[in-house]
Image (cartoon, rainbow, N blue to C red; front, side, top):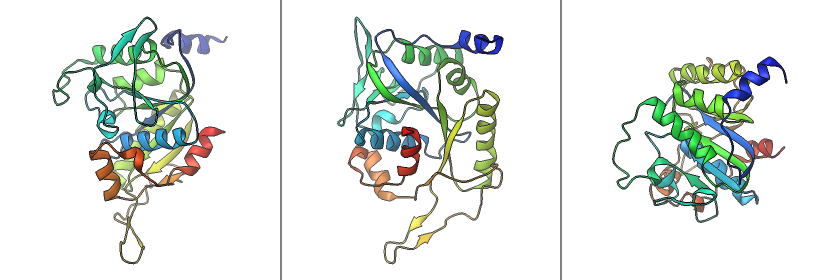
Length: 256
């Protein structure tokens, strides 16, 4: 092992001794409100439909939305092997702070050291069992939590979420550059809110004029429309009932 590899290995959190997580991908964006949790959830759902064992580690500690998307309730329980994740209707395992508090509307007012320590515990102290794909839903920005994930988890790559606005793409570029500096490969870019489908004629209507020129070699692997049906399914905790197929190319790439 080289000195550089040894340096990186020293930061890695210990995996749960009773678990075998084969691949880990982080869903990132420098900007909030672009749909990271939606893309995380849709990716997990499609991987599960293809027969894989899937888990979601919700690292957005202060703004968790994954439990609502899947209509999951706490509390989480422990066994001799570790904390037991919640499980969605189709069998996706989930761990999130909103599954650990009595009042899901109560704010998480913690400083960064506590938050980053908790995220490491989500990886090390949770009994994930056998998992083919773990997806990590990150908070926006390039602060302590993304840095902790990049350093502490053996990531196989990142999936970047953006929207077609220059302001957003400028900030997203920072997250991409952060991953590059830490030698974490980018699997692809998902452009959310890319267009609206006219309900009468089916035309794809572009909402924004931006071409995301700030992002180098911009070529999205998937484009998601602004879809009211998806928003309703998320609000009602029924996203697993969706029948869309926008992420097939991304899933194909993850399966290689």
